[in-house]
Image 1 (cartoon, rainbow, N blue to C red):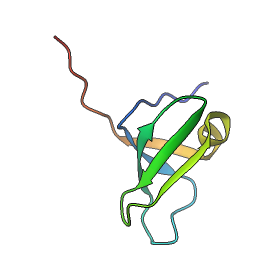
Image 2: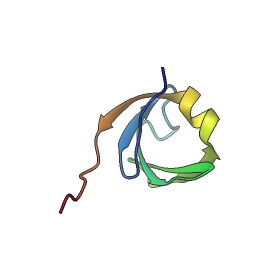
Image 3: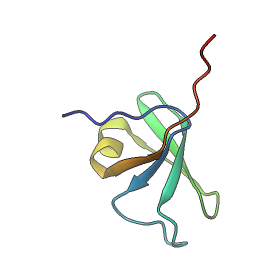
Length: 67
């Protein structure tokens, strides 16, 4: 089962950030994924396959524009 996530989704990771927050926003997607901490604003870039292993679930789905 492949986990589904998209740009601007807010996700929960298996381990919380040292600042105490466990909500991360996906701000860049490609071969690597950049996520930004919802608490302190620190951003981290990790490989897509590593991100898929460490992600627990999607907390907030991104709003999509449909015209």
